[in-house]
Image (tube, rainbow, N blue to C red):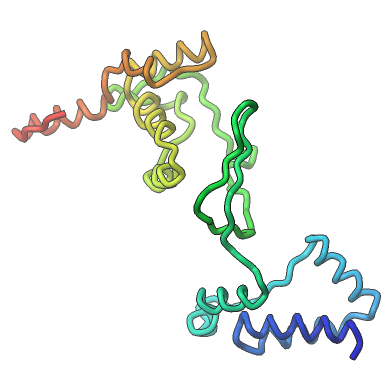
Length: 224
């Protein structure tokens, strides 16, 4: 048996195991048949250099996805191939401090990334200034507004442990006039700001006070 045939059989074997079907196996069989030895050699070198990857095609809402493409089967095939999806993470620390290795293993895989439309130049929104303030929320509005923070985005930030970023975005930049003004002044004069300093100037988020006024008007007691 030629070396090429061994490689083809190896690929076809595990493509079949991953999908637990024959459709994708047939696609790769046709692909290999269309290649001469030189083209096959170039194909393998691209795989080795991570310029291309082997992939499978699964139609949307296919029964094959539900019944055959399963996490359990993927883990089983990965174990057979001696592939560990979970790795310790190594963090390189700043000078004078030791590097850090996580005690627990985390899922590390390659995923396709698509740039969101907001990154296109025509989608970029730049505020003219920070002078236009909504009196009911304390937040910038009109020509001073450039972006919004949604609840799913807050959940993502929370999941990454960025609690201070959340506090900055929904408090000091989200309607706390005293803290927000202090933040802007410190950034302009010093280029940095800390939560301990901003807290001294905090006057509370305006929208919270607005809601309290609405509830009081409806004879509903609300405590801040």
